[in-house]
Image (cartoon, rainbow, N blue to C red; front, side, top):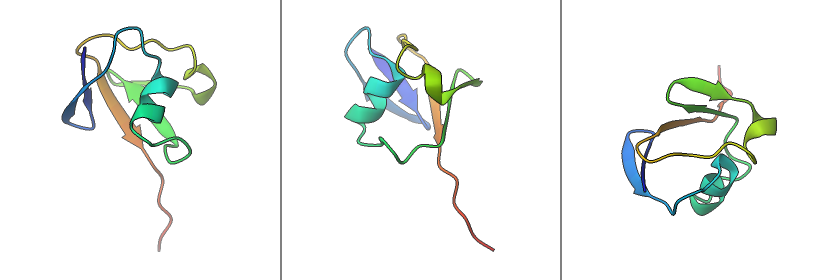
Length: 66
């Protein structure tokens, strides 16, 4: 299935969770917030949140600065 990740199309197997997608993208520990189809998914739900074909996934990392 195809998922749009931060504007880029990526291919994933069916029935993948948000947490599994982060593992495949090698982003575990780097992502602070995630939104699926413009709705925030809390981190404690990432293991259970199943992605669907054509979902739009936005991954955010907070960077400090001044």
